[in-house]
Length: 199
View 1 (spheres, rainbow, N blue to C red):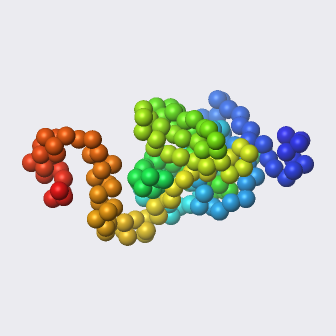
View 2: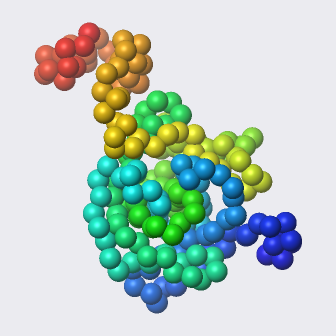
């Protein structure tokens, strides 16, 4: 886009090459930010990360490429699972995340979320991803057209420190799990040993 080029920015452009087997397309945006940022992207075909240490499950992978906006290919070197602590304290899992070394930003594909039955809406600078009435992700507008995820990636070595929780953390966790369950339902779960001796 010539007008954006004058301002030193790149337009988010993607093209789909159906003739290329196992290749994907992604958009490139000139955004100065930390590499820990997750960009919510409506133009990329997969969830993608450049950070190997973010993956809690990882499988080396060969033979797939992503194409940048300027049509240059970048090799996918792995595929796996990333865990993110969301804005509400709940840890969610992204699966089938592509590890692409030459990426400049980590991307969460809104298209992938849409194909899995999630809906996304944006209003007043906040993008919300939901399933039914439950908002599972939030992102804040950081430029005129980019949204960054509100949450923190759980890196493998850091996840061990999350095992000890204070009583208030456990209370919040159990409320989020069972917030509107009846007393009878709680008794049934307790008898089955599903409450981990928490009352």
